Length: 97
Image (cartoon, rainbow, N blue to C red; front, side, top):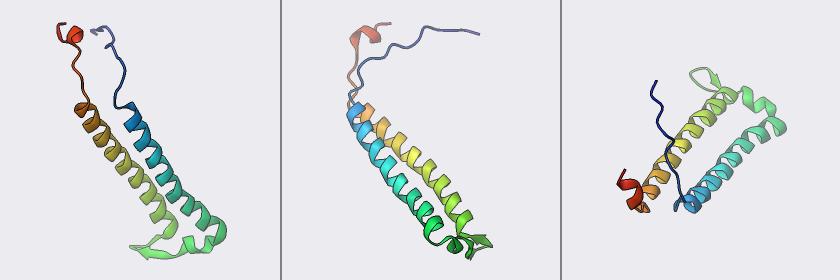
């Protein structure tokens, strides 16, 4: 197996942007997850209600949380990659190698 030297990394100019959207997405997801917890605490019988195709609220909400987390990850990746490309400053020392 061929092992190459680790890629050199430097200062990430997109780091403040990525931090800001990451924290925002974390709090947004946490609020939606808190809704799940609150429903279970305040009115747990609501979770037994059937929504459609035989799925109750608990299963539907659980799957929604999983899919929503994956969608947030994809959106974060797209936004972070776009910002990195926008702020990319070529390093002439690395370009020569």
